[in-house]
Length: 284
Image (tube, rainbow, N blue to C red):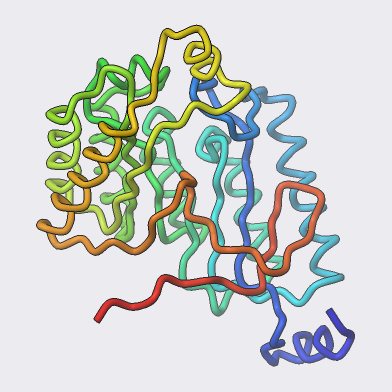
């Protein structure tokens, strides 16, 4: 980053290498899922408040060093909605006070159905969030229990409606396939249930057995087994079912969260800054 770019940004011009995309990792969860390899900590009030304050201190540091004019912001985790309303409001107002958000197109927060309330949804909407990524994973209670999730299918549907009632017009639903005990009938039912709610986006991803997780240890003991052939059928079924319902595939990735490709980033803390993004080519 050269000084002239910073100066142009300060004068209200758009610096060619300004930071356009921001990912913020909120590592706290009410429960640690046995398959998750992302950095996470069990939510502790003594830690979460300090984390929020430290996050804003990091933001202060980088706003003096970088030209930042975001177009997208993504709060992932962990479970960002594990934070209290007051803590979420502190972070959101801190971003609004410190950054020029006039060019933001999409500001996403990942939400767990077990940590959603009408008051929290309203606070997110007031704070500037305009997109929700809801981690449903499955509409089958038995499969959810096997995944160690803290919610059931009824709570997931209620959470979706809470966000709709709060005014969110851009909601993504996360679904998982390759779950132990999952059949193609389970998967089709989850896809159809999701389609019936008419979310704007559906993210389908395959369960993988990552090191340092309980599922990886169980796989190593022979208790669980990945099935590439079955996973391929799940994937094909998702493509066909969603396309038939009018959804167009935008990206294929091994990652749960389709974060932009990073060409320029910095920051030792939980914030990733990106100055360029690789988009999927438009369809004919």
